[in-house]
Image (cartoon, rainbow over all chains, first blue to last red; front, side):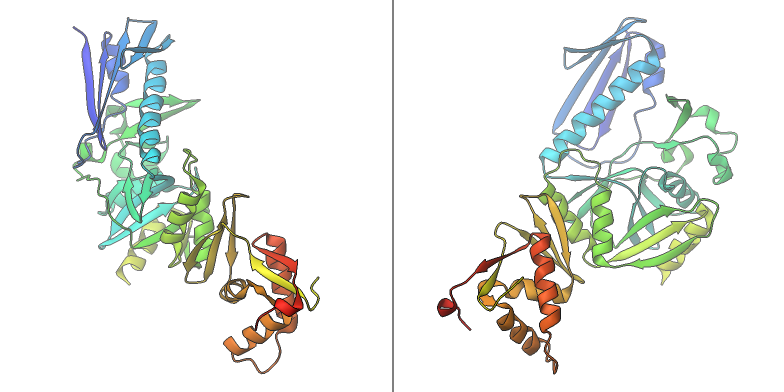
Length: 276
Length: 99
């Protein structure tokens, strides 16, 4: 018997069979209900045998043996994303650390280092009525950009910036990342439309943190922006010349630096920018 | 660094991307990305391997309609481009120099 966790991730279809329902519950951290209208060209099958310890297999090949359901999630989550990103990079996609949002019809690529506030900003944008396609990882090829559909990984304290989530976080899947409990937030669970598109962006924004300080938007010249795009590479093995070419294409018109004080004022600044 | 027979050539095998504020030059051999502002980009493009610093100075003066000779700026620019590794300076045969 057992349980299946099945989902789409861009052009891949993933099926995970587990004997233990506790593992299936932990793995519910991974699937999202974003609309993804891409043809399926790849299937990945995982099985998790046992009720602790667990024996994990990938396409019938032994992968790992672990003790807890959280460990299974850690291994399977990492493995699936690694496989998918390797395939994409092989197809000449570039992987960048960034989110994707549309305000007043202006599609913005929000790049920034880890901890810059992209996820909190993306969540605030969503609850402020804007379309958000992703908060963390984007793919770029020939100037076309799409977000990797994955749940937003919310950190404790998110309710301060998104009070709409207060009292509702307990119902969402969790995973441990070191000492921190991350919450998987799928916008569709809160009634938001979520669709993954492959299209150019109108504006590239570099998000730099200034938590607790003032929010501002300043001009970035093309080369300044290109440098930041290069810094945003997640290093999934892209050929450097492909990365440089994509960075040059994306950054050739320049962009903006968003110094992010608090998410609310950042949303207002981006709204004003998109309206102007 | 230059004398009147030194000629300048762009390093071969570079990938060049044009942007609104100049050129992005990627050198696969060193894995380095260089930004050349519009002026440096023009100077770099003029370096076809047959021109000396004084000929390049004359070319830049004509292109930018300058009344004052940009000799010093060109000299500095050439030195920077050489040290960046996107340009190479070689001893030319004055009799073979065009221009």
